[in-house]
Length: 287
Image (cartoon, rainbow, N blue to C red; front, side):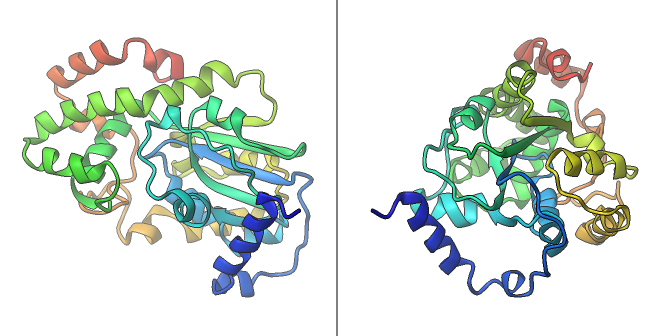
């Protein structure tokens, strides 16, 4: 009997057959001892940037694992656009072995529910929730494709002032995104398969050691010079086409700096934010 996993793997092979990266993949230099690696995160936490690095042929060369875009290659073809709050997302279908799966927007319970091979690793990227609010507002208002829940959200944001839009964004993120971040910090502390990292450490200009730590956790044995080359090739300046800190509100790579919420939150926003999220910042380590 052909299992779902085998059918899915065959379908994935057909879907990525025309991908030039697959045809030009280099020979494997080092094979990771982990069968699957799961990149877990929430929206607006550098997922597109990190996905690019994980899908790069050099990552394959030093892991022996192909990168697979979860939403483009696995989820969307079967189910369409995901609209559930991040912490409510659970996927029970088995993902074939031999992949770095990127990105998975989910809470820790969703990760626990995944059918995983015995040898696996995962990492979760979180972000200062105040910066996440600002990033989500501008992305939802200007740059993100109008799909899924944004079909209803964007017209609302377009009808609001920036100030009111930020208040709306605080409520949205508190309801649909923040619980997922809290779940990883509160529940994954004793899970040795999981490494929890901060967006700020991973994307700062001096991010080499954080990226090296991530690769080591996943047993991706990339040499120092190759990590440095990857970080240079996928720097904010190259991805955005401008210097870090120079804002373009209509770009996916809007500004590239941490702490930008201070430029947008008035006393009113900060007071409202604190009334809504309670001790979230303390829980996440963003006091």
